[in-house]
Amino acid sequence: MTNDQPMYEQIKISIDRRIEAEEWPSDFQIPSEEQLAEEFGVSRLTVRRALRELQAEGVLIRIQGRGTFVVGPRMQCAVFTLSNISEEIAQNGGVHYCQVLSHLALPPESPLRSMLPLPPGQDIYHSRLLHLEDGTPIQLEDRFVNAAEAPGYLEQDFTTQPSHSFLVRNTTVTTVDNMIRAVRANDEAQLLLQIDAGQPCLLLDRSTWRDGVPVTRSRFLYPGDRYRLRSSHEARPSRITSSLFNVKNR
Image 1 (cartoon, helix red, strand yellow):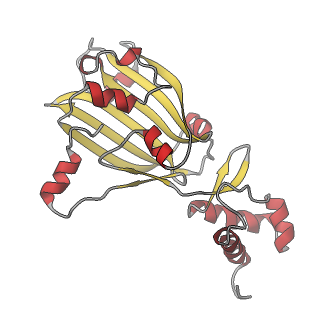
Image 2: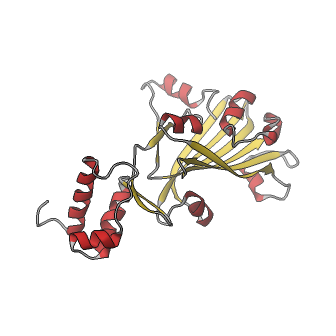
Image 3: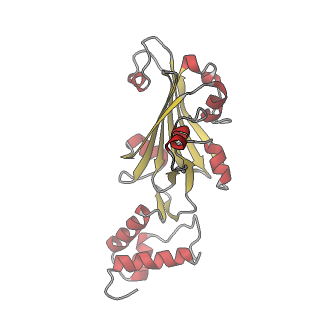
């Protein structure tokens, strides 16, 4: 550190060094803003700026009501082959828990029916699931399912098996469309994911069809500093197309 660096930058460097040296290991709760301000001899506003930038860079995570923690290895999922969330968590060394927020057939007047382009009167199932790793929310899943394409979906217990696993076994998909974008979570999602209003999220919006017939529409919301999406493929058009439309993708 040099004297010509702004103090918030010096604080960031100091925190980075402590993390690299594992003085502050993964999941370590760092001192409060007040404690850090006293240590560095600066205002809390200066500390707050340093912490916010480290949060934006994925180094720290602030969990509402609990404090600020050092981020461990961030989970990844393949964009075009979204796998079983519980398996991803297990591979990451964590413990998966699923909270079922909603699991029902949408009533005829529900505006949510527009999520799946099906004729009036055709049943659409909706499940809303919150996935947690070691008690920390990492994914909010909204899934809309063509009931005719997935018999038995409504009878499943998704606290014991992921919805993905059931659909892989019981539906046929020939086309998959993925869209990813950065979004701000609404008030309800902020509360469920334990994030602040200003924290960006990743939204993966996935639609599947069987020969032109809609099968599912799934929206997966991830806190941006707890999860990252990746994809790898050979740089040949035929291989890319194969990845996008693999029938195992849901």
